[in-house]
Length: 292
Image 1: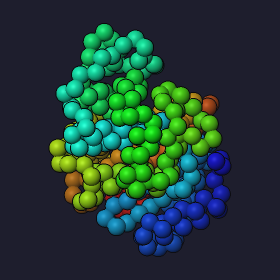
Image 2 (image 1 turned 90 degrees about the vertical axis):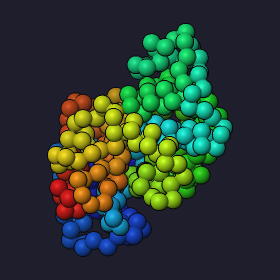
Image 3 (image 1 turned 90 degrees about the horizontal axis):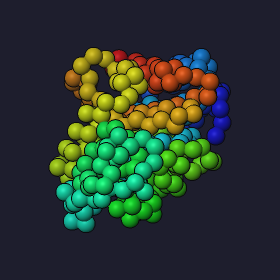
Image 4 (image 1 turned 45 degrees about the vertical axis):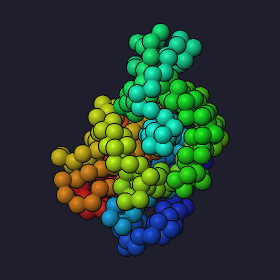
């Protein structure tokens, strides 16, 4: 992983745009990349972003790896919903919650210790408020990390790393538990936008409700979109620098925009500064697409 902005970042972005199948004017793409470079230069750290809408695509550091933190919980819920569809799981199945399940950040599971939560309640807590024990329980009930890895491969993602449980998976350790912006956008598009999504209408409705209703990340993508837009998204935060946000942006009219933004900030920066970078990157990207 390289830190800093240079001409290679611009060229990499241009190359990925070609791979993703769009044909913007090179001058426009270079202008976008320069604005993203300037944003990095002002704040330090490393920023990766990819967008896709109506056949147009835009990207910056698209093929670089970023630790994904809790953004993976969108995919974990999708993997669980696919098991429900296949008759291998039930939304109403009650799972015991014990003290042994507890790790940090347990707003839903900690009050349930000694009782039970249903699979649906665990997914809702995982997606909406990023409950870590709920995520670990869902991974266990899914069949472990191998099963989650198989889910990614099943939707055509052969690139994303799946190595650890919460909260260890947030710790930077080489390529462990990392994803690329361009792969994340491809995954989101396949699950939530594409007509050939493996999710049933009922499953997609549930997942979209949680992604829209989440109270997290008000100062990230949501702060960068125009008034009146709806954002269905999942945030992720590393606590020592990584601040991420991924999802689908719905303008009042026109095609939805699939977006993935990963920012590995410096340790010296504040939470507010890190989140503001995601918001600013969103504004820059939407302006480049003529959708600001």
